[in-house]
Each structure stands twice: as structure tokens, then as C-alpha cells.
Length: 161
Length: 247
Image 1 (tube, rainbow over the protein chains, first blue to last red):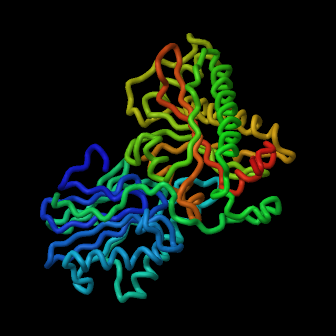
Image 2: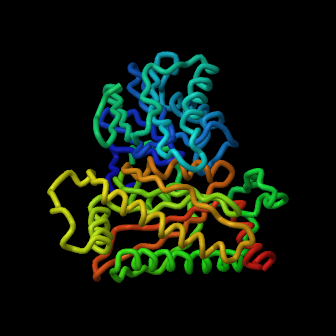
Image 3: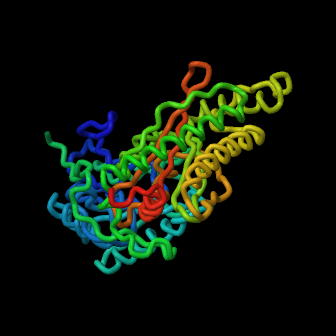
């Protein structure tokens, strides 16, 4: 929990997810680079969730439940359902998957994350309603549980998708 | 508490881990899972070497600036991805980072990180040392995230010098060279800069070895840190070189 976190402000750290059905909740993931955040929101049940995924695939991980997309996505979706969300009527939006560094290793991870997310959702009959993926800028993202607004903040701009 | 937070606290590695990623370098054959087997003595040997190398790197920054730049006691520890973010000021903190990839007989990542304001301050100190105090253009009150060419080049060189010094110090223990990539400057949120680097390291392990030191000049801390994050299999190479295997 960071200092700025309060009952209404829930922060998804790297590899973590946060969910809420409180109308005053805002779900935040700070400083996404190559990581990818998936926001899910059920407009009827007013349930929101935000997962801060790190990598395309790997074994299930208790310490970081959404570290990997292939094993963590179901964990996240089940948690949404457990909170009363119905996946078929929920909207999904994704942001992140940028490439910050042009030298050294690990640079294609953002692109692989974006592709893995689309594929993993499609395999479950789900799709992304909006995305802010790729590029070379870091992003902080925020999901408002009351109305499903998904805000993307970079150093130079704030946009809503 | 009505909060529904499914994020677990950082787990400090009680989970059994699979074998470390082997990068294809022939030196690393048979070195799988060494992150688990690193003994306390082995860790101390690595920490001592990293600590000395960080100290040298800070001294090199001092020589470059012509000022006495003090180096805080280096810290070397095993930590989770979110702990590394916290060490850099938190994922949302805006930083100026000089990134250098480490290749050759050791592989990993190094970053010299400053707060935006102290990056300006260090750049002025370095440029005054290079050009003489009278020859600097008047400092304009501009956006703290805007740096001119001279400042960027001074900071890039600071990254180059500190990280190369660090690697040279480690290289004295190795039979084959350690090579830095050209430095790259990024001005961004710390989380965004660090996540790509961390993702490269944590795919098969939950923790990384992070080495960090901070600097001060004229009694005033420079809010800056040097981070070195070796790939897990490279620690094995270093341990072998230090003669710390099996202790």
C-alpha cells in the first residue's frame, strides 16, 4: 500500500490486481512501461477491476497473481465474477506495452504483451473495447468504478479511452 | 475494512523456483537455479565486490566533476520488482535515467537515476568543471523536465563513466571482458523505465539482486542513485570468478 492509497484509491502494483464494487473507488496502476494493464468494468453490477500484468507466459504465482497473462488472466476474470461481474456484459480496456529503451535486452516485451493479451482474451470470447498500447511513453492508468471511465496519464497528456 | 484488494504482500521468495533462464552463452551451461543456491557467504562475496565497484563509480563521478562527490555506503540486496521500484522513489516518480545494458561475460542492466531537479544540478556541476564557471550560459528558469544539449551530454557521460568504472572493477575478477552498450537517456516515470529491465530479469525468478548507492556534493545530497541489476546466471559467473563457489 502506498502512502496515497485510501479505501477509495486502490493501487495495483507490478504483478498485482485490485477490484472494487464501491462507487467511490478509483483503481490505479502507476508508471507502466512494457507492462500491460487490463481494466474490466461491468456497467450493470458497477464492479471494476484493474490488473497490472508483467509478461506473456509463465507459471501461476501466488506472490504476484497476475504476473503472467496466460496464467493470471483467469485469476483476474474469476475475481471479477466473484465480485458480481458478468464477463459477457463487461467492457475490457488495455494500456501500456510500450518500449522505453532502445538498447539492451528485453525490448520486445511490450509488443509481446500486447499480442498475448489480445489472444488470451479472444480465446475466452472476450475482446478489448479500447486500447492505449505501444509507443515509447510511460503511462499511469486509472479506472473509475462509478462510471467505468479509464484515464491514461503520460508526462505530457491525460486522455480518456 | 471494505477494501477489496486482491494484491498480496510481496512474498520474499518462499516459493520453490524453476531453473534460471540460460541465455545461450556457453559459460552458463549447468548453472541453472543458482539464484536459489547462492549461499550467504557467496552473497556476501558478491555484495562486497559490488559495493567496492559502486564506490569506485562514485569516485569517478567526483573526478569527472572536479568536485568532491561523496558516495554513500552502497546497498546490495535481493528484492522483488516492487521493492526495486520503491528504491527508485516509487513507480510514479519522474526521473532522469541513463540506461546502459551490460553484455559480455556478465549480463544485466545498469541505470544512473536522478530526480529531475538534481539532474540539472549535477549537470551544472559537471559543466562548470569542464568549461569553467564563467563560460556557462545563464541558467534559465524553464520546465524542470527540459534539458539542453550540453546538460544531456554531461549527464550521459556521467552515466557512461560511473557504469564503465563499475564494470571495469568487476572485470578485474573475470577472464573475459564485460561490455557496456552505449548509454541512453530517458526522462520518464520510474516504473516505466524500470519495468522493461525488471521484466527481463524476473521471468523465472521473483527476486533480483539490486545494488545501489547514492551521492552527495558539498554536503548536499544529490538525489541520484546508481542501480546495477545483473541477470541471475551472471551471478554464477561472478561467484566463480570470486572463488566463492561452494562456500
